[in-house]
Image (cartoon, rainbow, N blue to C red; front, side, top):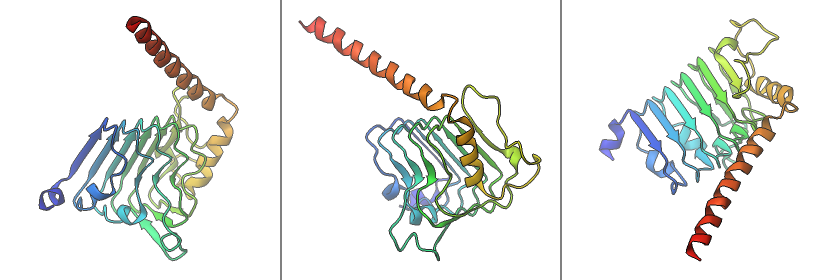
Length: 213
């Protein structure tokens, strides 16, 4: 436990059997950089109480976690009460790539605060219709540093406001981007990719069966 408390950088990659990080991250009180890649059994990365213990976290990157539906899962009724909140005191950079089932960053109704957040980059998350179900506070985040896009877009920033204007509501921006792109075929692109993967797997399976016969 004492060793874990001193770790500042953690990268978890291709752990196919990993279904939860809650128990293993409880003692990471000095963690500054967390990178999670291709952990396909994870449906959530953190719960609300765990999120509040990552007081030193500055960088959070999540890539290709196919089953993840939210970064922070919704808590109990008590945890999601109006008087509760989740605060990432030092988080400055948030990157999320290629999470095809991600619907939100947080699926609960607690207030989420990012007092130091300055960069958000979300790419290829076609099901993400809202950032959180509750209020999100980002007093230092500017429009030019909040990017939502897919592989077939140029860099996208919200067109209605100056780039140096502060983002007042990440939920509105996320929702508008999804609505603007809902008819562009983004979800279909992911469906086609999944179909191709299934075809490839079925082809390999059939080939193996023929060889066995």
